Every structure is written in C-alpha cells, then in structure tokens.
Length: 203
Image 1 (tube, rainbow, N blue to C red):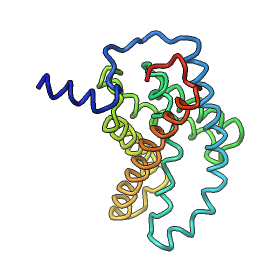
Image 2: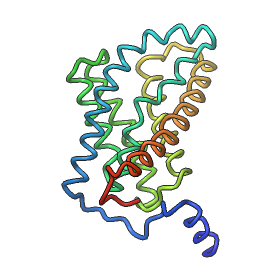
Image 3: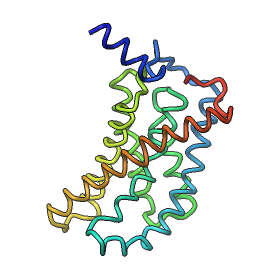
Image 4: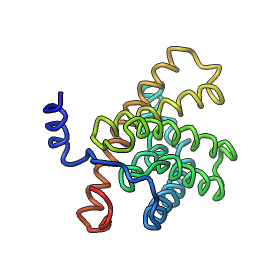
C-alpha cells in the first residue's frame, strides 16, 4: 500500500502535498479574493445569458444544464491555487456576493447558492486534510459542488418537476462539473503557472 501511494503521488505530478499549511498569507487572501471578484462578474453575466440558453432544452430537456458548472468554478480553482482551508467557501462566497451586488436576478438566494456550492467542495478538500490535489479529488469536489447546487435548485426552483427530469438534470450537472470545473480549473491553474503568475504558490 505504501508503494502504491508513493507511485500515485509521483504520477500525479507532485499534487500530493507533504503537509497542509493552514495559515493564510496576504497573497493567499488577495488571490482567492481576485478569483472571487472576477467570477462574480462572470456569474452576473452568465445569469443574464442563462435565459438565452433555454432553446438548448429543445434538443434535450435539460441540455442547458451542461453549461451550469460555470457557477461552480471558484469553489475548485481557488483552493487548487492557494491550498488553504476555507478557500473554496471563501472564493465562492465572494463571487456570489459580487454577483448579488451587481444585480443578480436571483437576489439574496445568490448568497445561499454560493454557500452550499462552496461548502460542498470544501468538505471534499477537508476530507483529504488539504493535502491531495490530484484530478480525482478535483473531480469529486466538483461533483459535490454540483450535487449541492442540484439539491438547492430542486427545493427552491424545480419542486414541481418530475423525478425523471430531476435525475437527468443531476447527471447532466455532474458531467458539466467534471468538464468545466475539474478539468477547466486544472487547465487554468497550469496556464497561470506557466505564465509565472503563481510564483510563490505550491505546485
């Protein structure tokens, strides 16, 4: 088992940290906040565009939800970069707060959505003690965030929708989370690292 763990760590390209440093540095706060603010603007714009994606459901009843995971990115991208406890929840709440302040169509519920999405991803990273940043962990955190959003939306917005559609929507949201959040966050993090933007951050 020890050999397997060592090999897995090596194969992951150094994404398994020897220990988790829980103390936030100023640069950690700044970077997580910048990610949150940037995606807060994206959230607001995505909310305006969301109604325009409705025709996609003519192809498949829940096809629009393939684009849902854009709202979940900060919950995985921020902790992947700063690797500190609370980063997922912090970045997602900042993004939700900025979106609400600009004028999100969902009002105060934007904050609740941000909380459940960030908290769900946070739980996954906490389970690894903030030491493992492999793709499977990112995928699990992304799907957990999507699951929290799915439950929240079911209760507040889709309570009268059939079970079959709800389940289909959950599956599509999970697929969206894997592609957009897990793979997208990893691609963004690697691009920023190659550009030299993440100097001083673990990698």
